[in-house]
Length: 613
Image 1 (cartoon, rainbow, N blue to C red):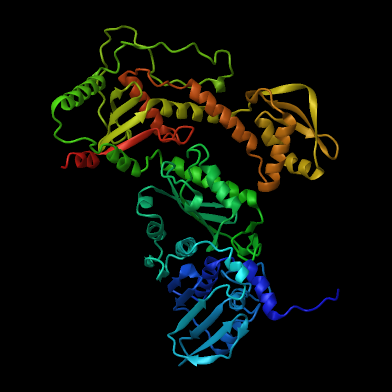
Image 2: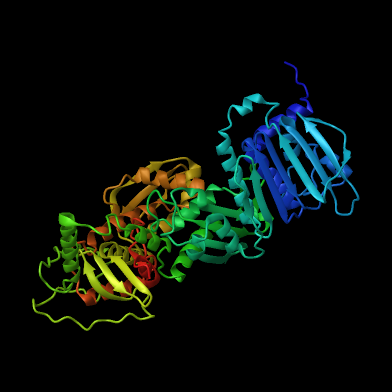
């Protein structure tokens, strides 16, 4: 079979298969071109989910007649010269416009600010017409009609018009977050108009436009630098979470990316604070020398490759966790709204007859239960035998000062504490249903789940012990030899000292094997070979070996759960206040080990709303 040169049209259609996956891909490329041209106002109009029409209008620098003719030719660009290690623009490949023109009907009208007239060029199925004069304001208008008409097979793989329109909306939102100083307007016959006014340097205001006003009240600012990588942005408090990962945004030198390393590191930073199946909310900007990141990984430019991925991952996890600790324990502002909805009346405001008497009696019983003195010993259950007797000190759950069993039935109550501004969680007032502590603050009420709160405190004590001392290990009578590829052995050896502090001790045993001599005692009987291979796989993908630490922390979470104050235990007032004070000084105490909230705050204004005041 002889080799022949493909036509320019076929080459562009092949490129379009990589660059233009769907209408949203074309929208992304066109908006990037507008931003690279310095546009401060971008309008996007669509019809049929972007398949029938996609029009992008900007007020950027525009193009002259000669530039317009070159713009629709493959690998023609004004954004780079010959150095792919110094890319400072969103686009640089010179493939977008010819690729779109090869599979759709494309027209481009443009005019520079200095020119007296504009010009227009049309491409249809890869065939370009002549450049002609056209009336147009300074800037550029790119119109794409009948996307994929030249490659009908591609149309079969597109989703519904509603789904394609939603994908375009997501692209515009990401671009808007990356460039808050630019005004975006998205409109069309298949959607309601989305208008995002420019917010200048106020990134948080732009985030509120995209993610909603609730994010502003639940955001923690990030600002960290490690070596040559700077990180800034905002992360939501752990209790402000969502059901999918669609609210995690990352930008590298202004470029929106959906990189697995970045998104995985964000989730790892919230590992013990967000419930399973829920996702945090965060918007992060990374600034670094273009030579330290490769953006030419994929034609869609959504993935990047860092020269030092471990440094970037560590920066993300450290910055988010430090910010959560610095901001103190905060409950989501949406918790009060959910509580208010739960308080909405579900029966007639004027009940009559037997139903009224039953409701009244239930309410009286509830009031009597809530008013019973929480420090009385009636029904108090002694704590079970200490299951951690004889265990190493770091495995023993920490007890709070003031937590003690009443010594006498008629013991007098201690003086009532008053809420103070120095105590964000206020002063304990009552214990409801032997599990929920009601505390009064200067601005409202706080309801605490005593078991969940104590569980978190014990867990943090165990984690602190992990970081301060070497964990106990179990020496194997006969070292286990784990055969594995030589490159996997090379990846794991740099982590030998770190993993030995966690109780896993291994050494090189020839070119393609490791000898495991000790395993973590907390894990009990463990398949050393499977553990080593899992860590090697993790090191190959992320260049880290955090899997063992995660397993040990899971064990610590289980120990904390079984060693904490149980639901149903009555606490004295001083015990409840001791719990509140330690919560205020413990990082992450707003969530239990499973990510559920440990307390809910209800402002006085919210309480007054319940009574219509």
